[in-house]
Length: 326
Image 1 (tube, rainbow, N blue to C red):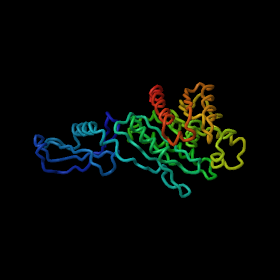
Image 2 (tube, one colour):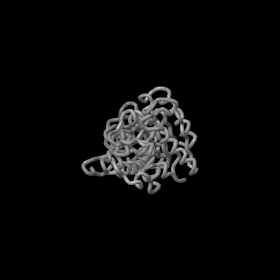
Image 3 (cartoon, rainbow, N blue to C red):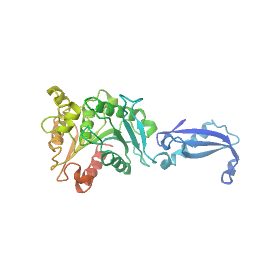
Image 4 (tube, rainbow, N blue to C red):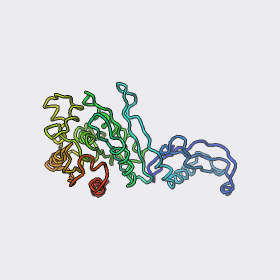
C-alpha cells in the first residue's frame, strides 16, 4: 500500500498478473498490470489499471509513483460513491451497537463534521437531521459522518460515550478517509445539540475534543428551560441537582470550549431559544469564539427542515466556517 500525497489517501496495488497488451498501451510493451483499488470505493471497486514495461519490476519506485499519480487524477472514483455505515464499537455492548455513516464528497476539503440527529434521547431523526444534512455538507466539500448513537434508557453515559468514540475513530481513520485530524467538528440538532455540546464540554483529552461545534435549535440546559422528555430519558425522573448541573452544558463552558455556531428560532416552543442564548452567553463570558443566529420564525425543526429560516442557518454557517478556518 502507498499513500497519495495529493489527496492524502492510501492506494492498494493488487492483482499483479500477466496480461495481453491492449492496442492503446502497445507503446509500453507491457506484460504485467497492477489493479489499483482505493479503500474509499469499497473492496471490489477498480480505480484503475497500471501497465508495467518489460524492463521494470512491479515493486519499482517509479511504478509506485505512477500508481499514485493515476489515483490522484481520479478523485471522483476515490471519493464520492455510496455512504458507508460502519460499526462504532468493536463489538455490541449490552446487545447494542452504535454506527457511524460516512458520506464523502467528490472533492473533499479535509474538514469532517460528525452529525448528531435529534429525537429526545428516545429515537433518532436520521434522515432530516442526519443523512440529509450530510448530503448538503458534501455539496460544499465537507465530509459528513452521521452518528447513530445508542439511547440511554437509564444509562446516562451511553450517548456521550458514543460521541467521544466517534471523535476518536474519525481521527484514527483520518488518513484513510481524507480528513485533516485537526479539522473535526461536531454538529447536533435538538437533543443531538445537547449531545454535541456535551462532547464539547466533557472532553477528556485532545482526541475527544471537537475542533468546533454547530448547534441547531439545541437542547442545552437540564434546568428550568429544558425539554422535559429529553431530561427524563437521559437522567431519569428525579436526578440530583449535581447531575442536572453536570449535564447543563452552559455550566460546563470554559476557555477551552471549541468555537461554536448556534441557530435557534425565537418562536420555538418545544425547546426555547433561551437554550442557545444561555450557551452563547457562557461562551462570550469565557472568551470562546461563538456566533448565535437568532431566526425570526420556523419553530422547532424550522418549518419542517425547509424555508427561509432553514436556508438562513445553512448560508450563515458556511460563512462562519470559512471565517474560523474550516
